[in-house]
Structure formats: C-alpha cells, structure tokens
Amino acid sequence: MFQDFRYALRSFAGSPALVAAAVVCLALGIGANATIFGVVDTLLFRAPPRIEDPGRVVRLYVRRNLPPFGLATSSTTGYPLYTSIRDAAHAFNGLAAFTYPQRASLGRGAEAKRVDLVLASASFFPLLGVRPAVGRFFTPDEDRPGGSAIVVLSFGFWRSAFGGDSAVIGRQLQLGRGSYTVIGVAPNRFTGVDLQNVDVWAPIAAATPELMGPDYMNSGSYYLQIIGRLGSGGAATAAHQATLVLRSDDSYSGRDSNAVVLLGPVQQARGPEMSQHAKVSIWLAAVAVIVLLVACANVANLLLARSLQRQREVAIRLALGAGWWRLARQVLIESLVLAIAGGIAALFVTLWIGPLIRAFLLQDTPAFMEPLDARVIAFTAAVAVLTGILSGAVPAWYLARRDLTPALKAGAGEGRYQRSRLRSALLVAQVALTVVLIVGAGLFTRSLRNVEGQDFGFDPAHTLLVTIDLRAAGYSPTQINALHLAALTRLEALPGVEAAAATAAHPLGWAFASAVSVPGRDSIPRLSSGGPYYQQRTCVHVRRPRGLGRDRERNDGPAPLARRKCDRQVLRAGGRREHLR
Image 1 (cartoon, rainbow, N blue to C red):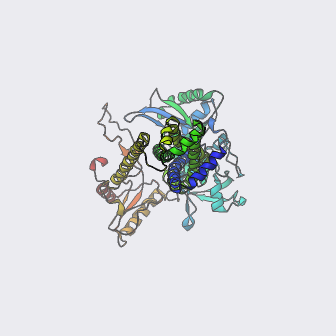
Image 2 (cartoon, rainbow, N blue to C red):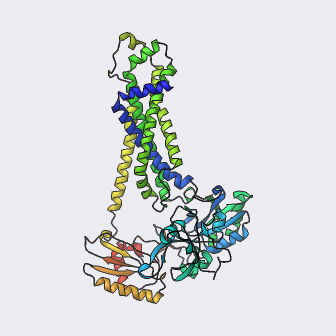
Image 3 (spheres, helix red, strand yellow):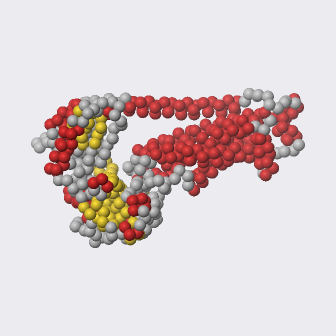
C-alpha cells in the first residue's frame, strides 16, 4: 500500500489539472456538508454546554384541543401549572421553569443599556448540575413572591461589562424600575438549555411582578418553559403524573379530557416545536448531500477517464502477474489521496462559509459556537474517506470486469479518448442532480423576490417604527401616554417627516389569538385566516421621504395609549380592511 501511495503521488505530479479539478470539487462538496453538519449538530444533537447528564433532562409540552384552533402542542405554559406539577409529579427528580431571553433595561439615563434577561426558578441551576463561577445562585427561599431582589450574571456579560472583577458580588444594579443585588456569576459557556445569549438571570417568583407585571403570575398568562430531570420511574410515569395534574386544571387543559403532557429532549429543535431554523438546516443538509453526490460523480468520471487512458499500462501489469485486487486497490488509493486533499481544503471552506451560514440560521447563538471543532473535523474526515471510496469504487469496478488483453495485443497507445457507457451514465447523473439544484435555487430566489414584492398596503422601506419600553424605566401609564403624545407632536414638526402617528398596534407585529363567543349562540362564523388576533404594543410610526436611511426598531414594550389619529394611520397602513374587522 505504501508503494501504491508513492506511485499515486508520482502519477498525480504529471496531471496537475486533474488533481486541481478533483480537489476543488471535493472541497466544495465536503465543505458544504461539514458546514451544514455543524449547524444541524448544534441544533439537534449537541447538548447545551455545562449541563450534567443531559440525556435525563426533558422538556414538557402540553397537547390539547383548543376550539376553534384545533389540536395544538406548545411548551409555553404558566406559573400555576408549573407549581402544581412540581408538587404532584414525584417521578421527576427535579422540575424547573424559565423564560425565553427578553430585553430589559439596565441602568438609567445615558448609561442605560439593553440586556437579555431570563427569569428562572431556584431549581433551575441545581437541576442542570451547574456550579457558579463566582458567588452563588438564588435559593428557594429567595424565589418567592416578595423575595429578595437579586440577580446572577452570565460569565460573558460579567467579563464584558465588569471586566471579570470578583468585587461585583454585592453590587447594586438598576434593572428596569428596581435595584437588584448581584449574588453570583454563572460558569463560562453556560446559556441554559437554549443556545441563546443571556446576560442576567433573576428568580421568577420574586422578579416577575416587577419586571413583567403582577398579572403574569396568574393562570391566564403563558410565558414559561418547564424542564425536568427524570427519576427512576422513567419518562412514561413522569408524563402520566404530569398529565393528571394538567387535566385537573381547566385553565390549562382547555376543558379537554384528552389533554396530555409530552416529554421531549432537552434540545427544543428535536421536540414537537421544531424551529424554522432547524427545518431550514435540514433542507440545506439535503442540498449539501446532493452537492456531494455531484462531486463524487465528477471525480469518479475523472478517474474513470484516466483509467481508460491507461489501458495499455494496466494490460502490461496484468501480463506481469498483477492481480485484479492490486489494480483496484491502486485506483482506490488514488481516489483516497484526492479525497484527503479535498477534505483538508474543505476545512478552509468551512472556516469561510461557516460563519455566514451560522449568522443566517443561528443569529442568537453565542460566539463560543465555533464553525470548526473536534466533531466537525471528525465528520469531515469520515466524509472524506467515504467520498474517496465512493469515487474510486466505480473505476475500480470497471477495471476489475474489463478484459484489457485486446488493448495489449493491438498495441493501443496511451492518451486516446475512448467512449464508455459508464462515463455517460455518470455524466447523466451529474447533469440530473445539477438540474435539481438549479431548479431549487431558482425557486428559492423566486420566493425571496415574491416576499420583497409583497404589497402590504404601505411603503415599509420609508417607514420607521420606534418603540420605547417606558414602563421598565419606571413611568406610570399616565406618564407614558403623555410622553408618547409629546414625542409625536415633536416628530410631526421635524423637517423631512411626511406623517407620524402613535398606535397601540402595528402591521406585521406580534399578535395573540383569542377565542370569541356570543351569549345565546352555539357558534359564530369562523375567519378563514384563524383568530381573531389582537396586539398589545405601543409604538410611533414615522413616515419620511426617500433617502433618509434604513428602518429601525428599538426597545418594545406594551403600554396603554389612545388617539384617534392613530386609528386613521393604521387603517391607511393596513391595506386590507378585513384584517381589521
């Protein structure tokens, strides 16, 4: 095999064009697969960092029938259901609740900055087996209504905002409307069970009434995620106990006697609520496999053409006593040499396009998720070897079954082009796969163009949306209304502003769905689009001439507001009247 390896290097030295073409094809094919594997591995298979025994940690989902919306599965629930399951479902070794990262205001005045805040129960950190890097985590006695105003900082935020100073423990931070004491720092790379940036953790029961409002602690509010660590009873027993608790609470079961609690992996993308990013990454993985098949067919065709040109050499080796396996092994060694070179080049392709793909699919993933790590490198090596075997198997099989004695008798010269049905078949396969990729790319481009050309009834390219979370800054509802209306008056007077309006909702914003009933009627007509939907948001719309920069949106937060002009502006902007009925 060492002689075959040396011979392959010597023969490739005389064919630099073939080597360059093969290496480039394999680098693109293997590099695309390695890049997408890094994304899929992050979303679906890799456990979040710093979690102890992640295979025993599960997410809780509620599946129920909600007329008129039908069967729905969601991991978002409320605080009362969490406490009920925590107290009754003893098949779990522990249960914890947390919120998705939400924007909060840290500091006041010109020094204020936006941070990502997660509200978590006191059992959150112990359940995941996490130990603080500095200080401590909050206790159950502190995680209660009226508990201490305390926070835990993430390691990255501690390093960037406070320079990694251990003296930050005990320091007072102005978070929202209140002052909170720093009691600890989470370990490096820890972001909870979701790969999202987190700056600050605060206890749910103590901080929710002030940071989000007292109504969020009631059964009508859905804002929490629940995770549990399975005990010795297993997943089936734990899910059954949680289901019994769910069905005993009409506010969460929706009066559905068939409502159930489902348990999913800690990676949310593998559960019933697969994100759009995960779905797109799976489609991209399929596309990357097709690209790799095209590359394999291309390299196999190049090696096959090379083998056909070397028929006289092969015939002489056969006449000297070489076996078919020795000849086939030589071709496989040559293919593996090309694949290894392509795999090395693919690592550079991954370093180049990996950050672009992650910026598109994993926008909120922390910076420590590198495009190249041990798992990606191992995957690249495995794909390179597999690609080498696949690319070399076709010409090796061709040599093993072909009778080359006539070529030796006829004295056929080297380098003549010869027709081959196998080469034609490979070429047809390449073209077919390439057409599939081109059609897919065309449809994708057409979809993007359709989205860009969507008629929303207003011009989004020259409309600014500005939202300010004044409630988190300590303003009362009356002050919030007065400040918004004063800002609106000043905006209308700015040069270059065609029109401005204040509104409690805006097109394309977040909306909530609600069931509607009429007393005395069994049913009412249903909207084809579902709903009805309603929005709770305060913002200011500014219409400005062309050429004044891009649209921006800043800190959002619900607050009451009323003004007739706002209604007229929304009606003009909404376009289709039936959306507002």
